[in-house]
Length: 231
Ligand code: IPE
Ligand code: IPE
Ligand code: MG
Image (tube, rainbow, N blue to C red; front, side):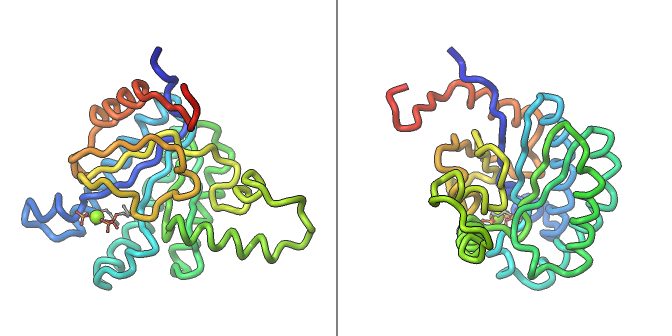
């Protein structure tokens, strides 16, 4: 019997730069094109009744890139949030960000907070954008927050620890898709992805389509998830 559809799909949107280079275009064109793909996939996920879609937009390691690229990405985040919130409203999508906001500019943080506030009552798909996110950093910040807590909480267990992570309240991802052909997790949802099914496709993110997305979802339903048991 096929497994049920995933509740939470997470995507490592990789390959924008290579997509652009293939066309002799600057890397930033790839990032712009990537926003169009995201729009398509958000719509598809909402239509399919997926509860949560998490996308990796910028990792804590991506600051290592040339300043010009980082600046262009930050500008793109602001521009995209300005433009896309009305469409998120039309599609009943609730937006939420994970990652450390402290190193981000005031402009970026303001746009993030505003768009979260505007979409907070939407009850369809939850779109989680991982911005300045990494799994290790998430865990480290959770440990620090736990140490600083005011109330003396009960015994620390997995459930309590998870409530200190950026993803508190969300189900763990059932499926993690990576575009761009690599087979690595690149410090994405380390705690949350402990038992996620992994799917890698060679398609660069700007070329990833609704059809490719459906292919990944279909493959997921054929996986045998045993969680350490015997299935
Ligand atoms: C993913 O595409 C987007 C970000 C990391 C911001 P890349 O920019 O990593 O594209 P490639 O992997 O260099 O092709
Ligand atoms: C992962 O892609 C991060 C995002 C998609 C935002 P990278 O391009 O940064 O990953 P590596 O460097 O290939 O592992
Ligand atoms: Mg990459």
